[in-house]
Length: 213
Image 1 (cartoon, helix red, strand yellow):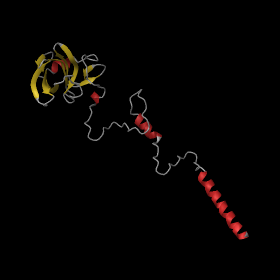
Image 2 (cartoon, one colour):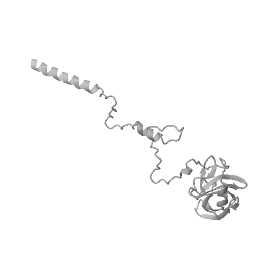
Image 3 (tube, one colour):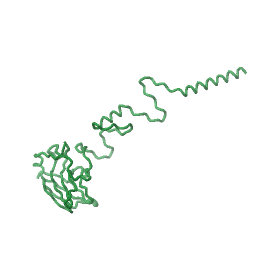
Image 4 (tube, helix red, strand yellow):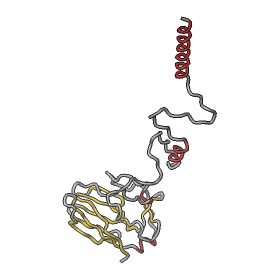
């Protein structure tokens, strides 16, 4: 009997110790990060969040945890983005210039002609091609297209201007009317025709190129 009682007491003592051990939280040494539970994702280190938030413009709210890092790289397969175009916005319903036009005189004297194509949206075919000079208006399909400026390197610097006199980012500033009403006033870029264009159900304008002649 005494032996049985001793074994029973030993088993009870071991069970109590095991329960106490399971309920006790693992102590974390000072300065040491806690270990994640098995299968649970580890939180991102603060330095990682600080790094991706440092790429945001001044005044922009910080990114929430888990947001893809903004490291200046686009997703695989995305076309490269010209830095001069980073501050642009949608051209939808843009019927007047949203900032001053400050094209240097040297630029207007150098670049005199633009080749502009009118493209049918449905077929994707060029239905009319024009060679247009600064200040000239051409007409097609009820549209009146006035080329105000031919710019070799259009940038936005408190207004529309040219970053240089070299054709690094060719564009034209146009005013387009239909039935006497302005339907678009803004830029059209040679390299990025879809970024800014006329708000028309049938046609789009494509800047094919600019020249000095």
